[in-house]
Image (cartoon, rainbow, N blue to C red):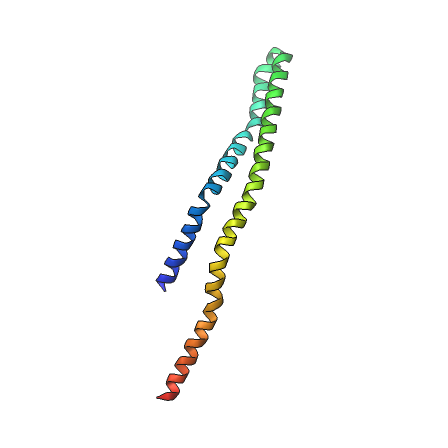
Length: 125
């Protein structure tokens, strides 16, 4: 019984190793998007700290342009991440499904064959 679970773990590890680069790419994009989510709070912090006390319109324009640029970069990264994530999940699912289905489809057949052979052996003796 332990051997079956060990086989499944090693197969899962094999598939994960094949797709590690895709998971790494999605992880990097997720990290960068989460980092860029700080744009709004940092923008407001600088507005209250620099623009309001001094009344500098140039600082407001510069901060607003930087915030817009950061939001644009975040949109591109999020779009790219949203494109790669389903692809990596579909590849992972396809790699896992074939072996999983074959093993679990054969299980009832093997169980029925064992029960039949046990019944035949018990009637023979």
